[in-house]
Image (cartoon, rainbow, N blue to C red; front, top):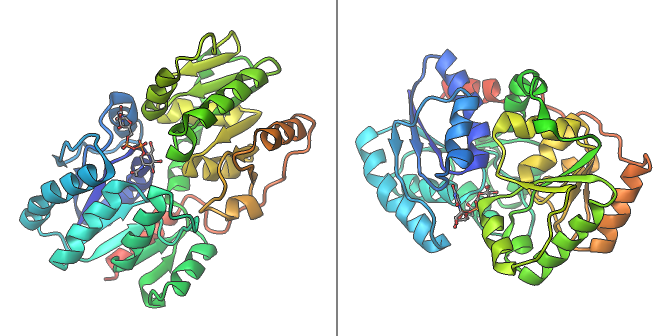
Length: 355
Ligand code: UD1
């Protein structure tokens, strides 16, 4: 058995790391391909180091571009690699452009594809990730799901149940493994209590009017509470486009994207998190930290039904009132999510080993 993994963007790395380890323990031959969708040291290299991942065997070096350019570039550079390496199975992760591009190449070459984190749906096709999820699941041969809602979505889309394996959440495997190391981090001297913020979705940062409103709301919040905001490169460009004067003050600190352990430590000690990230909705739920999601929907409904997540929409008044509720001690109390236990990758490796 030869398994080839394809990773490309920051949220892929935390999901692939435990699979690489579990398949390594099972002595499966593995190849790691990085598409180069994310290429900055602090969006990629530092994650490989902190997650103890091997260096990629191949880096396609595609970099940034429009969706069509990036997807097409990944496909044309990946095809010769997969033809040369001839894996028995290709594993793709999550919902980024690298995921759908690699899956499509393999499907046309009739190389089996396994999708890690299959079945999640926001039911909002204006999100590029939703299109990537739908298409990847349709052409995958093995679908590894993190929660029952994902199985239900796949059933509705007519995907044969025999292909679907409910295994739990690989990103939580990495969190469970590295939380003790994160606890040793000093949090860069950030004074508690503080709110932690991340924003990078096109729906939040590409609409400059809305982005301005959000930034002003965060600036307001920082009069009450320290706000720590590691800024994604895409968001940094948009903020520069806005030319806002005097946004950051002593208590709104806008930082470079944090490495994995530093960011996990920041989440762990935050009084609340404001985000539009998918992975952070899951991590905060696992950690029991209140999370406010600035989106109209979520593809991760268990984080709202069982976890600490509240989807506030694009609504500043709602965001403010939910922040107050948390500060007044009214945060949701989470229940454990089945199979989010640090062993999802072992379950996937067992399925793969039995093929
Ligand atoms: C991608 C994923 C998104 C995921 C996010 C995590 C897709 C469609 N989107 O969005 O689902 O949540 O990654 O970060 O795949 N840039 C840099 N350095 C980098 C990478 C990007 O400066 O290392 C800048 C570039 O200007 C680029 C922009 O960020 O144009 C956006 O990068 P891109 O990979 O297109 O999408 P993300 O917004 O990061």
